[in-house]
Every structure is written in C-alpha cells, then in structure tokens.
Image 1: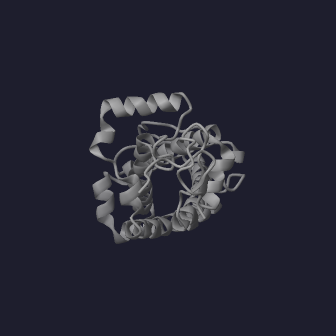
Image 2: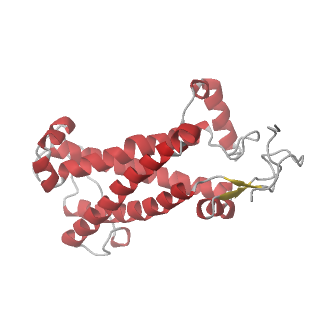
Image 3: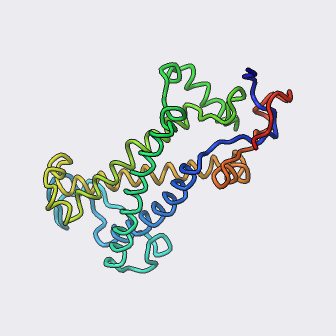
Length: 249
C-alpha cells in the first residue's frame, strides 16, 4: 500500500457531509446568538459574580455599549433580542447534540480530533507555531489532517466553550432555572453564570476572528470548497509532486 502523500493539485475528501451541515448551521446560529446577545447586553452592561447583581452593586466588568450594526435587531429592543436569542439557542444546542452523536458514530472525533501525547511535546508545539508564522498551515506528509494547533482550538471550542455557553444559557433562563435549580448552584449563582456565559461567548468570538483570518491566509476558495463540497485541493507547497495518488472521485 502506498502511504506517500497525494501530489499537489489533487482533490481529496476532507469533510464529511454531517460535518459540513453542522458547520453552516452552527455558523448561522452563533452569528445570530452573538448579535442578539450583544443587544441583550446593552440592556444592562454590567457583569457580576455571585447570585445577585444590580446597578449599585460592584461589577467586575462593564461591557461597552455595542453599536446597532452589531446587534440583532439593529435597534434597541430587548424583547426581540431575547426572542432571537432563545430561538437560535435551541438551534445551537440540538445541532451540537446531533453533531456529537454522529461524530462518535462515524469516528470523526476519534480519528480527526484526538490529541496524542506526542503532539503536546514543546518541540512539536513550537514547530507548529513556527509553521503557522511562516504561513505553512498543512503537514506535507498528511496535508488533509488537522495539525495540533487546530486540534487544540477545535477541542476547546467543541468540548469546553460551546457546552459552557449552552449550560450557562440554560442556567440563566428563568424557565430552566426553576426546573434545574442545582445548575445555578454549581455555577455559583445567576450572575456568575451570566459572567461565564459572556466570557465563553467572547472566547468563541475570538476563535471566529482567528479562524476567518487563517481561512483567508490559507486560501479562501480552497477552504470554502472543502466546507461546501467536502473536497479540498492539496496546495503546491504541502505535497510531494510525485504522481502516487489518484484524485478523489
């Protein structure tokens, strides 16, 4: 069996259909959740720790007033912002659940996102950082695979930030908090849950900005094709030019 990397220009299968569907549903849901969340934040831009918080209580952070072009709707309307937020929170949560189930069944998580001990060696991490700084984003021996920096970022978002956003969102929702009062106790109170919710959203927003920058640097057309059709073209600088692999059908 020939294990040599595919030649440059070869189309290889990179993303399964379920991954692509979840990516676009998730992108839409998060875009609307962030916009509507900023609209909600404008109603009381103060964050606290503990069970209680009001205008005259000490706040550890005061978010800025977000401009209308960043919020959903595009004008101050707390009721509409909440409706958009709650609707797409359900889209995010059930989409996440479906993605996790399918990714365990088809072994996407085990195959593509599993972090091996050798990948966490300082020398490996420093090598990947240097490669990124040189705008080389793909392993020449495994051009379609995720590198360790991608794995760490995706694992942090999928298994830490998104679950935290969902759990804290449930905790600060009045209906759910009545059904699961223990959730607020675990999170340290309603205002602590709200602060964790904001911090998790900020982490996801930072990931999105970095992700979009890297997509642009890696080649927008190729990266978009892979997330729409599942097929990704091996760049010229990542693969051996020997014709050892057949193009993906």
